[in-house]
Image: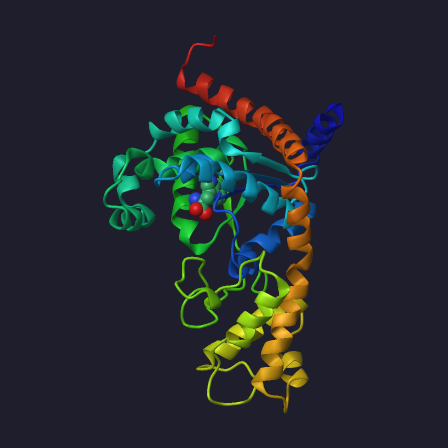
Length: 345
Ligand code: TRP
């Protein structure tokens, strides 16, 4: 324990930049999520001081089945580890285990304008989609998210395009708070993943649509825990086009998508893929992509099986993660309370 503490002090003194990101407890995710974002997380651990949270408090802004939320939170934790987040190198914790998130949420909510929150496109989308449950938490969701980031003085936040507006708001809240009360928060920058790291993966059955777990057609989407034979079967039935040439070109959405996937898992460039499959048919190519993906995901699936079977170890990890997160978050919270004029107990 002392060891971790020393390491944390060292990291701050070395001024490694800090990354914070929140992971929705949706359980198993898709190949698209994996190649688009998740795969990047483990690489970032060497360069940055990384803090990852399973954001179960955000999850209840939509109606959840309690038993299922509990199960999926643990699964997401195990999955994050299986995808390469090392709970010793990084801090990996469950959001609700650190009360500072709820506490910061209140203070920051009083520094956020109603008008700002009303402009959030995700709130508009979600309230249209869940018209029977437009709760206050859904409205203030971005404030909770700003707290996540600001409590840890994160320098960088890896976000997808759908979260950019929320990050922009977090920056505004940080700047406003700093302006009103004096420097309290680091103003976070968005982290834009490199072209390949941030590959956008499309549906296998309709390559004009994003690959999505909620797609009606199960063949459209590869889940990262799919068995190898299932993965290969899904790629074999992927939609291509009526030509026969494996090359990246406008109008060849299906082949472009398969090339993007193949390139992301093998590291091969598009040119070398075109050369590899010159004169061969789509059948050979689809099989090769399926096999490469199955091979790429095998360690994730094996690691996940190992972690999820060992609840004792998982518990040890998330308890330790929460303790380490709490130390940092509480320091910021204390500063916030002092700045706004709360009497120290
Ligand atoms: N809202 C993010 C999403 O839906 C999850 C999230 C919560 C998050 N807190 C965060 C992401 C802080 C980055 C930083 O994906």
